[in-house]
Length: 447
Image 1 (cartoon, rainbow, N blue to C red):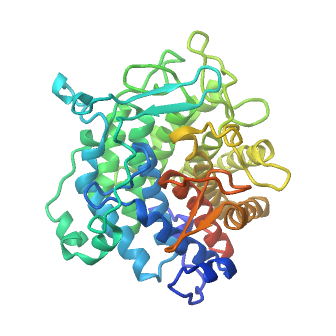
Image 2: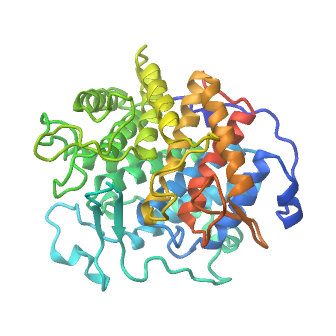
């Protein structure tokens, strides 16, 4: 298995109070305390019945899961964090498919009964042709927030029926239950389950990740040089995010699955295609995708998450099959992205942030970048990346938080000021930066 920077033994963490009362929140400068208070804030949206978070979309929840796994790796001595992570993984793998907006859509020979008919409003995704911002249109009641004392993280951690051993015994997940017809969504979940495997060493998570990847791999081969994957199973749009996720998932699996060569070959093949596709522009940032008729770079918006996913993939491939070009490529993209996306104070933002037009999808983007920038810092030790992580985490904590009775919550504008209402997507994204900051602040680097 590859040595992720979160798996390296961390320096001893100083003891911190368990309370996140307002006075403590306003005075603490401990990066680990920030994440723990943020976790308390995230808890309010957890739904024990579905195993994921209300107010967040389907793919957003996969990213919150990944963040939670990284927090468990970064805060290994906190018993509460560990049990929340492990039981959340187990509860989600058992129950979260009930929230899949289009269950079984990719199952071979699926019938009409597998459609989104169970919802009054069907699930759709589309790309704004002017901004290239993706939008997910969910059923009407999707983002409900059930305020119930019987459906909380406290129930998850306190009720023995949620013990991970009990929940996972003889359990075999069905990969098709996780797929919604959009390959990027599918692969976000694959990466989430790889991270759950890293935390728990339970093979059920790795098996699910492999099954998801192998299904998506059947869609390889677009009209652009007969390579890459489309955005969805209807063969619409060849974009950066789906192909970066395909590459990154393959590279992650190459370091964990027994059939290393198979996944290493996929990672190399997909990376070669991606680099040759032209989506990396002359400024070394990544545009949104390819023009449908010419297969040329469409000059679509330089979104932060497109600058991030490839970084983690390059780090993982360099573990699986070391090559002197991989980390320099990652560093070039990461540096260009910081130049493109940072404001005068070094805080990154997407173009939709200021106008409040990020919708349910764009609020997740920046955290994806910071998460993967942390992986790259661990592999390179580049002080520029460390400084960027610290700068963004400090700005989030200082300028973009709201202290509540139990924990803190964050908005989408990391430079501030806080603009509510917060939701689980914004929270998970901000926490990605806070978790990366825990690791750099403790000097935990990979080999």
